[in-house]
Length: 479
Figure 1 (cartoon, rainbow, N blue to C red):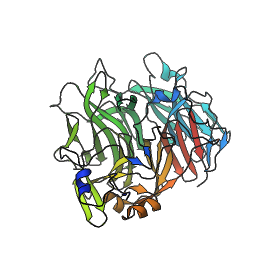
Figure 2: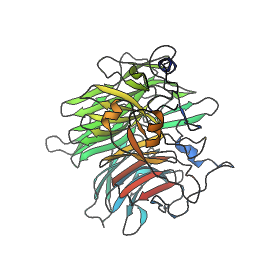
Figure 3: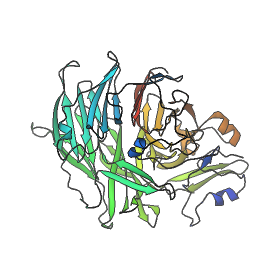
Figure 4: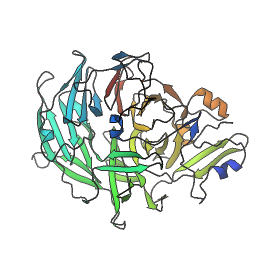
């Protein structure tokens, strides 16, 4: 029997609980699971999209739209890697990277059906622009984007037909500097025999309004603040570190997502770095409210394991075993927290290790539950369809990963029971209660799968979704 829920266990006996626990008794296993014969692999690096395709590679998308309403847009340079996109009703902004052009900022308009560059190239001055971070646009005439090393660019224009005027500021970063690592970008080499290099950028900007803008770089969060009528300044508000940690431990903020003007979520990770294997560690989750920052998830890393720190939530997993009931066991997640989205006041969904395994967190109930997305299959048997982004658009969630985009209901009670996201058939086959139903869609074109990472999905509604990544910016205007 195929069991629906957090772990890929199949025997409807009490031995399930033993088989699904780690040998050292530290909680539920976080090993990749096998679903329908396809093994879920680790996430790919941005550079992998530029590798030469093998004999079984995908068919490249043709210009136009597929049967699911996703349309390929023409890029001004075919080798652009889109890092982020920020949509409005009739236009969208994007930040991208290129080996030849450096960091570029673009605008799409429905009127022209084309992307155009809107930067002044100052972001590629000597010593800057090594890579791009997340972006934020309070309005169609104001835009923020980030580049390494810790530079925030702010653009404004008087109207949609006028050019942008740009200014830049180096964030007042006073964190640790290392000879062997970048405070704004983590990497790791994992999966022996496959040697996939994963990257996570600890750099970005977000906000809740024109006057409430935040940035992060390395292990620090900053807020754009004006005091005594002076010009705005970036002021450090949170530093994630542990004075008792070893000198080799790194701390990062990787992503952020506002829920409202009174609530913003930040995710990251910390742990040791190795010159050969890179960064390993445990996830972190921070919540900002008018009363300040609170640490929701944090762990102590030791010998490859993550142990929950005092005064933070202890994650758990509910296992429903047909015929035996529901069992609650601890779960110690390993890896980085790379994406987050609010799902209700005080509650968020957190992607860990770019995996189809994720955490549902509810601060009101003091609950952190492990969940999975089941029924989301890779576009090819050995591709890496793990998740790069998740956003809430109206009453639904949208995820993007390697060659995949899918939607989901928001079903908080089910996630508190670790029932995750799946199809009606998978829940019925498992004989368990129903979780959130997945909304499948395809980003395949021309009869072949899209063998590229899609780093960000965003939208203003079900009729205006964007999914962007390596060499592609896909637009969906049909529900």
